[in-house]
Image (cartoon, rainbow, N blue to C red; front, side, top):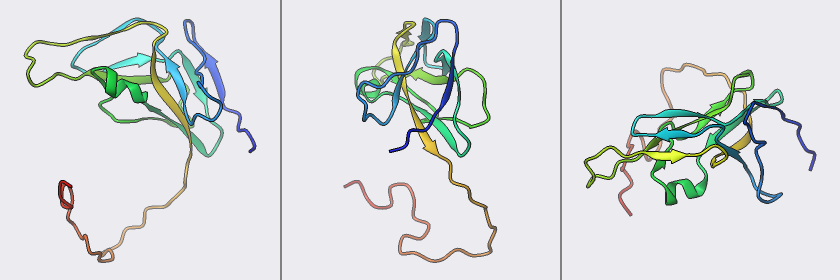
Length: 150
């Protein structure tokens, strides 16, 4: 398989994203500075700027253990790093509040903590074409929860 070069510039305090295994789909990304994450979303710098090749972009997603072992949540679900963005790559997080808890919760992140994953994605080009009608399907306009709980 031909490797694609992705240019990356580390910032002061930044750590090069890493893969635990050669066949992993994503690189682990590290917090550049100590941060306290409360119930309002905050941006956490990952310590690098990146230049995906033309026709590609990067996605920033939580590590799989983040949702299981912490109260951290990424409110935008996935961060898209466009091909033409040249600022510091950041991850957005907030601390989930349990329903039985009435006080403000925070999560401490230390510089060097693995807090996100980065995935290289191929950008597909398409043109939006406005039409008066769409084709009919069995599902139709039935949306959220329309197929039942189980």
